[in-house]
Each structure stands twice: as structure tokens, then as C-alpha cells.
Length: 378
Image (cartoon, rainbow, N blue to C red):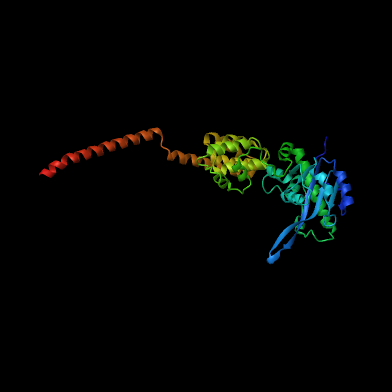
């Protein structure tokens, strides 16, 4: 029987790398690892420009990497050539980050782009919801560890680094890897759904031009992307819906699915509902919340009530709240539409009433015309 995943700092041999030779050695040792935890520390430096202008830049201060039994801190201020890490970072070894967007960008800038990535912060969000996706929350939940994160505000560009800071830096990469291993033990399907080559995968070939443009914009700007291509959602719903459904059927990464669902919701594209409804069963709470919101705004009660009722019982509080609000919104919208659209019987009665009133008015007019000559002759 496999022992449960726990965090024990004694598991790792630690190495502080400050020259290229040592870096090449540890990179070779880690080359066969199935997964490595990766974390960065950065500092800020101001770049002054002519005319008194200045810009604050993020500067790579430390690279921390942990495999199953080796944990290293690479100091890029002392070891300036990081190219020995390139094969490891681009190879098949799974690179595990936590909230890794900025870290991935800095590695790319340093010439060691990361490929075959998973972000355990995204997995934490998918399983436990918001405010439970950070390292402190995950470490407390999984391992009963209370973390002091105040050291993150340290100026990591100051040298030498004291032992307390080094211990903190080692631990972050080690915990990142261990959190991933815990997730793999308890939620393997959710982990697999979040693993990918690139942090931000490209949209599939054949994605409509307007949709590709909307995907790169902030929330709420999808309408602008569509209108710039003369695709008014009020008159081109069928085309927009077809484009969205085609792309939804080809993507699986939760962040991408979430974005597409939000675009459909923002544009009011009801035609995308058939491909949105099944996503109510997504392993990601992020997607389930977006689907609940979309159903509330786009679906008819006949098809939307049942999935929303189920989502009201979701294990994640945020999803439950969104589903409850969406259900009220959907029912209110349906009631308003019913009030504004009279039924056939009412229409027939109104038509008969109008016809009767018209006949009476016409009869009265004819009587007036008949009386006028008599009145004029007298």
C-alpha cells in the first residue's frame, strides 16, 4: 500500500547553485524526473530613460527547482548563464507551478522557456474554489502546515541571502511539487485536465477571426471584437453560435473553456447553449460557475432549470451562489417574456375587439356624412 503524500523537508538533498558547473550537474541529475516543482523569486529595479522617464522592471532573483529527492536554488545574479536548464525546462518532465503566469514569462525572458506545464493553483481553484488556491491555503488543507508568507516581501536582489530566506525559497518549490503529488493521488482526472504543453495554449486551427480576437481581450470586450467584423450579435447570432460551438468542441483546458463560455454569455449567444449545458458536469468549479451564469442568461427554463437545480447543490459555495442567482434570473426573464408576448386567445380577443370598434367608428362616420347635406340645405 502506497504511503499517503505528506511534506517532509528531510526528504530532499538541498543545493545552492552559484556557478555554471554546479548548474550543469544538478540539471543532469534532474533530467529523468517525472515532475519538478518550480518557483521563482524576483525583485524590482528602476530603468531610467531620457527625459526623466522611468520604468520599474521585474528582475529574476532566484530559480528554485525540486525533484523527488533534490532541491536546488539557482542564483542568476551569480550564475548568469542559465542555458544548462533549457533541456530540463523544455523537455517531457512536468513543470509544476503555483500561480505561475509571471514565473513562466520571466523564464521565457531568461531564455529557458517552460513546456509541459501544470499550475496547481488552477487545480486548487477547480476543486476547492476561490481563496483556497494559494500555497498557504493548500498547505494547511493538505498537510496541516501553517506558512508565514511575510518573507515574500523581501528584497530578493540583496546579497548575501541569509539562511532563513534560503530555507523559505527551498520550501516553496518543494511544497509546489508535493501539492501536485497530493492532487495526483486524490484527483487524478482533474490534474490531467489541467496538464498542457503551454501555460496559454493556442486556439485550435480554424477558430473564427472574431473569436480569436475576443479571446485575447479583457472580459466584456467580446462585443467590440464581433462588431469590428460587422457581426452584430442581434442579427448574426447563428454565425457567432456556430463559431463558438465549433471551438468549444475542440478545447478541453478549463481556462480556455471558461473564457469561451464567458464570451458566449457576454454576447447573449443563445445558439451556443447546446454545447454549454454538458459543461455543467466539468471537474472545474471555475467552469461550472461560468456555465451556471451562462444558463441563467441564455437558456430557456425547460432546458436550464434542471442543471441549475443540480448546481445549487454543488460542493463549492461560489458555484452554489452563482447557480441560485442564475435560476432566479432565468425565471424572471421567462416571466417578463411571457408577459410581453400575449397568447393566441388574448390576441384573437383583442383583434375581435379592434374590428368591432372599427366597424362602429366607420358606421358613425357614414351617419355623419349622410346628415351633412340635410343640415346644409335647411
